[in-house]
Length: 109
Length: 113
Image 1: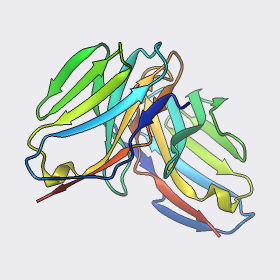
Image 2: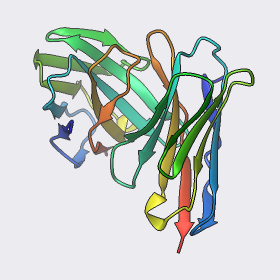
Image 3: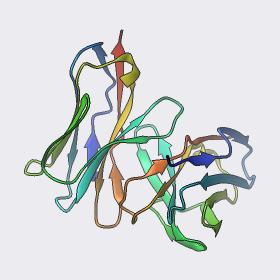
């Protein structure tokens, strides 16, 4: 079983929709979680970073962690065509980062 | 803003060639990483360096070596390139330990024919 599992998609939504991107993880010792955004032909860039259970909001983006069910989510409100990218979740163990394989999102104008 | 620069965006090499991938970061970060990214497999850590001349193997070090002679520069070496090393290679740096948030370069797409 992989440390972090992520549905690869692809996911297509109309502009303005609320997007929900999800990951599950198996290691209950993960200390914190991250979401990266990767545009085509670019490297991943850190989008959100959260330590604990609950929600963290940054503009149109909300990261949610549910440690009891080992589930992490990224919500994008009022999605824009510029949000079209691959989104990678990651969990931080004691000595390493574990990445999901990424979900490709397309926001259609 | 942290900048991680990879010297080549695209490389095409022949089987058996020795290949050097170069990476430079400008934020005085202690830690530097090399990952490869393949569809369906995600990001896999090849090597990690926590100081000049110091390195640790990642999850898939076979067929690769690294060099860190200066703090800002981290090189990945394919001693004898093979077709199964065709991939996207991503360099990253971080201020904190190995499980810290990473700053990535834009990648080098390597094709081995």
